[in-house]
Length: 370
Image 1 (cartoon, rainbow, N blue to C red):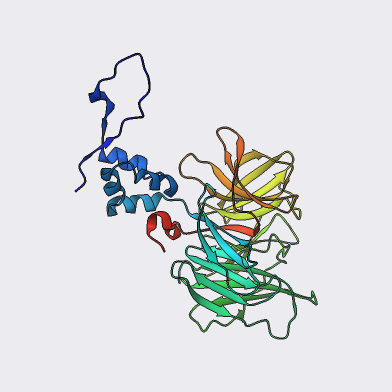
Image 2 (cartoon, one colour):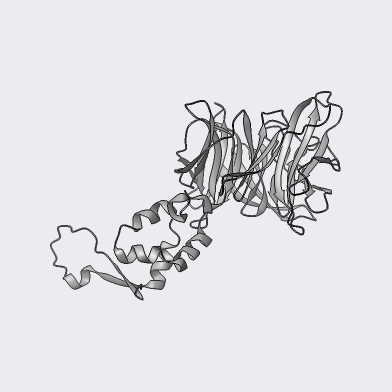
């Protein structure tokens, strides 16, 4: 039974000319106050708090606290890296860059394409068509499909993973550019309908398949892609009716190959645009009217080739993002809008391709995962 008040242990003793009574050395706070403070801690700090006292351990381990903490926990970051043994692994990290779990990648040469909750989507190689979806919570493969576009040698592929809002169907999307370069081929695979690719509507304009832009961004029941022809436009593919919609970019944004990236930021479609000497972060506020609001303007480091925002942290409002440097390195930073400064986040070496988000339920430090 946890008492309604929890005792906060005294601070370490220090030499002081004034006498402090023993009664003042211990402070009692209500359980609600302690819950409010501890529930915002990241898992790394919370694990340390378990060692404070038996009372705190019992409190932090209680189902009521676990439920509150889980609702406030930030999602984990996920990226693929080359291991020293030559086999690729998935690195699951907290927002401080601490690796909390390492998952062996599938056999063969697979590329991390997308993540959604506990699910991760891979494609076999850069230009190949094999598709793999793994549930990281159970370790089970829920989709393996080696089917290719019949008789079509592929030059580039673009992948996306998402869930339709109305039907709840989980769908994998791929857009293929044949080596002939004649016309893109658009296909969808719905889990549960026999795991077969089927052709669907082509986008109204060509999708950009530039190597670092060929990831579908899931937001509001649709997958989003940058246009190749009007490079500040976004092509939105509704996963329920499988129809396309063109979303015009922010006014004044001029498209180019490298400076523009789109992503999902706390549930909203986001565009990051490098304009010397700053990076403008835009959020889509009105889908039908293509209205964007400028949420952040942060200084641009000369080493940035492109920037992809990942998350606005609940506590403090800091923006965590990754960037690809001129030295072809994938790095992580945090921008503090109050200070106007960026701070490096230490991550594992040799990260590949992209960094995504996955469920905080996969954190083994607090949630009891194996």
